[in-house]
Length: 240
Image 1 (cartoon, helix red, strand yellow):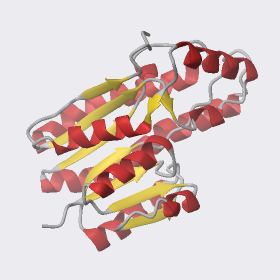
Image 2 (cartoon, helix red, strand yellow):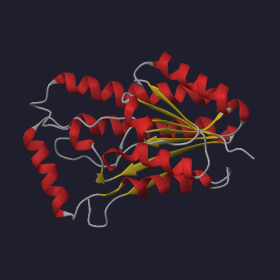
Image 3 (cartoon, helix red, strand yellow):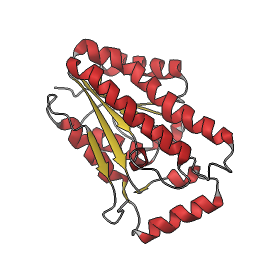
Image 4 (cartoon, rainbow, N blue to C red):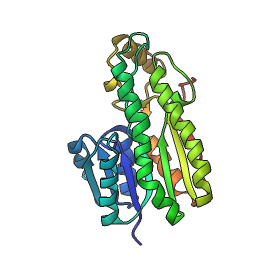
C-alpha cells in the first residue's frame, strides 16, 4: 500500500532536508518547498516533487500543494519548517530584519497551514508539525524578534490543536536547541554571531539535524489517536 504525501517547507537544507531524507527512506512521496530549488533537487530523493516557493506567497504555496496532491494524493503530514533567524541586539537591528523574520516565521507558517488544514479536517486525518525553537519557550539575548515569532508558533499551535483535535488531526511542535545547521548564515550582527559561536563551543557543539528528523518521524508514526504535543530536543550540555 502506497504511503501518503508529506509536505515539507524550508526543505533545501538543515532540518528540512534531513526530514525529507528520513520520510523518503520511510517510503513517503514528498512535496519539497524552498527558495533554493537546486539544493532540493540535489537531494535526489525518489517520488519528490521540488518547487521553488517562498512561503510568504500564499497562492504559490496553495498551487504547489494542489499540484502534489493531484500526483500523490492528499497531504497527510505537513512539516512547517521554513524559517529565518535574524539575530541581533534589537536596539541596533535594522527593522527590515524584523519585517523579514515576522513575514517568514509567522505569515509563512500560517500560509502553509491554510493550504492543508481544510483537507485534513474533511478526511479526519492528518498531522501538522510546527517548527518552533527552544527560543519559543525561553528568551535569549539578541533573539528578541526571533523569540517573538517562535512564541507565536507555540501559541497558534496550542489554539490549532484545540480546533483540530476533535477532527482527529494532530498538531506537533518541535523545539530544537542548538543544531548543526546553516542558521548562523542569517545572522548579520558580528557581536551576536561571535557570542552565539562562543556559546556553541562552550556546550560542545550542536547536535545533528538527523536527530531532529528522526524525532519528527517517530512522532508522526505514532497511531493517529496518539499525539506527542511537543518535542524539545537540545544538546545534553545546553542547560538553558
